[in-house]
Image 1 (cartoon, rainbow, N blue to C red):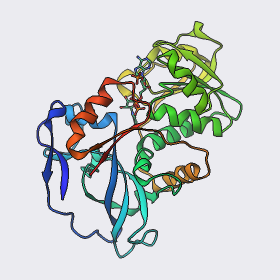
Image 2: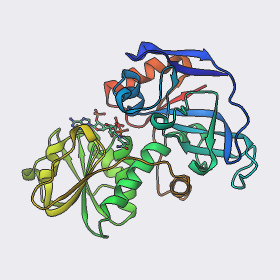
Image 3: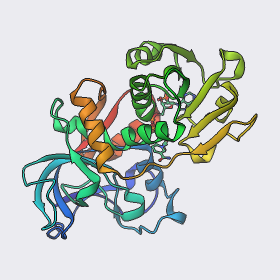
Image 4: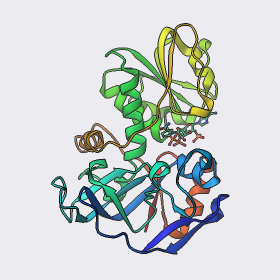
Length: 305
Ligand SMILES: NC(=O)c1ccc[n+]([C@@H]2O[C@H](COP(=O)([O-])OP(=O)(O)OC[C@H]3O[C@@H](n4cnc5c(N)ncnc54)[C@H](OP(=O)(O)O)[C@@H]3O)[C@@H](O)[C@H]2O)c1
C-alpha cells in the first residue's frame, strides 16, 4: 500500500510517499480501515520536526497522522460494533502507538472508532476526531455550569471552532478570541455571543469570564478569568500559570470511540458543523504541512490517498 512516510526529522520535504506492506489481518479486537481521508493536525508537524522525539517511543521510519475516516474492510473475531463496508472515523494516538493514518489502510483497535456521520462526505468526517475530542474533553474538564461564561482562544481554529460550538450546545455563554477582525463573523456563526479581537487578551479587554479554554498559546489570557475561575490549556508549552485561586490544568486528548460517536451524532443532528479548508493527495502532504504552518486555515486540511 501507499503511505506518507517520515524517515528523518526535519521540514515538510521529509515527507515521502512510499510503498509499505499491507497491514496483516486485524487481531481479535481490531479493524482494518481503507482510508478515505486523513486530516493534518499541528501534532503531525511537531512530530515531523522531531519535537516529540524525546518523549515518544515511536521510532523512525514512521507513518504520521492521528485522524482518519474510511471504510471497514475486515474485523477481528471479537468485534461486534462494526462490519466490513461500514463507514467509520477514529482518532489514533500516533505519537504513543505508531499507528499513523497517512496510509491507504490502517489497522486500529475497534473501540477507538465510531460510525462516521452520514450527513457529510466521508472525507470531510476525517476533520472531526482529534479536534472534536480535544474540545469535548477539555469542556468536560472545565465542567462549567449552564449559563457560565467561557473564553475560547483561537476560536476559529480547529479545536477552538469545535469548542465554541460544543460549549454553546452546553448552554455556556461563549466569548471568542480571534486574531483578526475578519474572523469575528465566523466566531459568531459558530455560536459565540461575543468576540474579542487581538493576539493577547487581557483583563481590560472585557468583563471577567468564569472559564478559559486556551487553544492559541496565549498564557496571559488567564488574566480574563475571574478570581477562583477555571482554565484548561491544550498548549502545554505555553500554558497559563495558576493565579488568584484559578484552577489551571492542561488537557491531553485521549482516544475514545464512544465519545467520538456522540460527536458524529451531533454532526448528523445539525449541532456540530465540520469545516474543510483544503484537500491534498498523498504527494501533496508537504504542501499541506506548509499550509497549516502558515496559519490562517479556517477548517481542516485533508490528505486523500
Ligand atoms: N493537548 C492536546 O491534546 C492537544 C490536542 C489538539 C491540539 N493541541 C494543540 O492545540 C493547538 C491548537 O490546535 P488546532 O488544531 O486548533 O490548531 P489550529 O487549527 O491551527 O488553530 C489554532 C488557532 O489559534 C490561533 N492563534 C495562533 N496563535 C495566535 C496568536 N498569537 N493570537 C491569536 N490567535 C492565535 C490561530 O490563528 P491563525 O490561523 O490566524 O494563526 C488559529 O485560529 C496546537 O498547539 C496543537 O498542537 C493539543
